[in-house]
Image 1 (tube, rainbow, N blue to C red):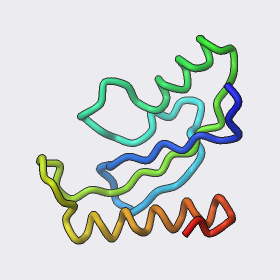
Image 2: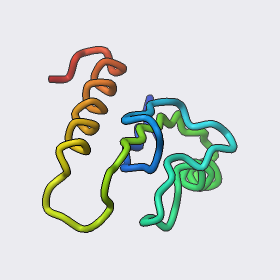
Image 3: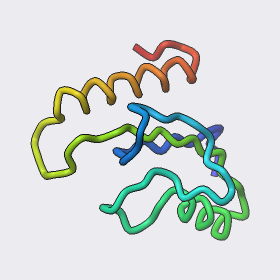
Image 4: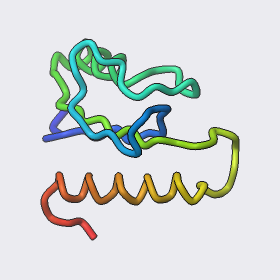
Length: 96
């Protein structure tokens, strides 16, 4: 694997609109009940398969409703836009 950084962005249940941080060694990542594997398990799997520790950043975006829909709620869209801004600032080139 030849990636400088991996960012996992996902809807989450949490208190903050957006949480952006490195994945900790014992950290499961965003709380989600719709996935079969979490970020910690993914990192562990990559380490076992490739003998390499991935530098993973977690971007947990607070969701409002987790029902199937074609659109985000206004608050979820605002949180997603905020997450994009945080990631772009972290990347350092503005990316917009």
